[in-house]
Image (cartoon, rainbow, N blue to C red; front, top):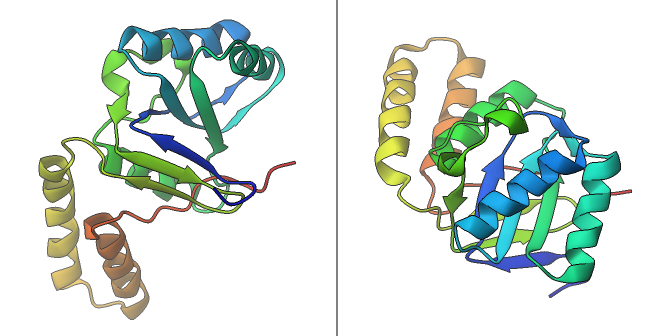
Length: 173
């Protein structure tokens, strides 16, 4: 593995649209993952701070579950959250309190580096993707504005490619 890159094989993926600060919230995510038989977890969140970060560090030291966390990029944030929900086939939770086992999705592999993350082989997302892409294609067929048409084409391409390419994470400190 190149320096500064983490690879998770067959992890659970969970997305939450908040900065996780409370250690008990992080513990909830870890416990829900272990309860589902996972030994790897990939977290996408607005950030992880304070006691939540300390909980992740303690988890790493004890070797309970291998965890990688990335930040939701601040640029085009709402569009990113929408696309992430489409690609994973799960809703992006507004807070850790509302997360249940149904918010987690399995994938084949996650490769996360300093500037990008690739999620490969998400489980059972094809029917959901098709249902979300169909309206985008219909809108594209009637769109007359060249800029909006180009953005729609790019979005459809990102969502329907064999590897969904959604840039995750911000530079690490």
